[in-house]
Length: 198
Image (cartoon, rainbow, N blue to C red; front, side):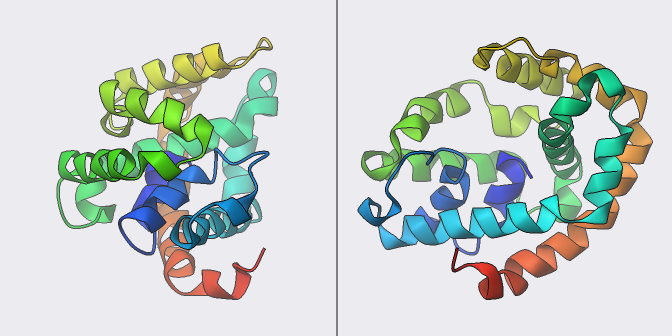
């Protein structure tokens, strides 16, 4: 799952939720130097990723990605799922509107900026300024996000074409997300505790 899903599935707001986002920004960081609540969120993030990576529905989604982009299928499917989560936020969100949720996340990132991993410290202001969490909900926003992701990679890649890929098999990807999401919510709420020691 990508950023919006990790934030939505977080077991608690505040620093734990920030940790669920920080899981993508801790390569090379000694976790023992971070606050325990942040590490709790990072471990939740990793457990969710392991669950998703092993799920047959996700494997099915990845096979839907056309061969020229297949090497990026994992990243693309994660971002596609965030699109469907944002689009159906009224059904799958936290009970409030997505802009309110995004504002709370941005406030938490600002409040805890001093303890964030360096890479997340650099990304957090752009996350708010470019309204990424809200942009997931539209196809135009998805195109912008995927093109920005493509530019951040040093090597040539096809992520910028991911918006076309989503449109090509839109209903099938939507169905995959709808099938996965209830199981993922159950795992993230209850089942992950058996898997969070790593």
